[in-house]
Image (cartoon, rainbow, N blue to C red; front, side):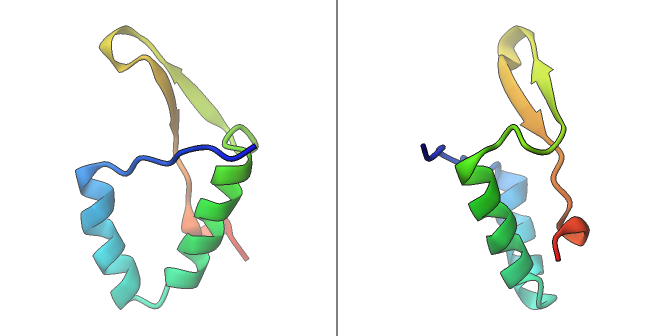
Length: 63
């Protein structure tokens, strides 16, 4: 099963910085992992108008 990943405006801005800092491969690897199973890393359930889940993913943890 594949999940849809929606990027925030800030994530789109950060993507430009990632590209410039040669972390593109690590970021792409992380996104592929999240598409397959977003619940593998720690996640937090959101409530109220932000119903859903938030995931704080760090590129530094990806080999």
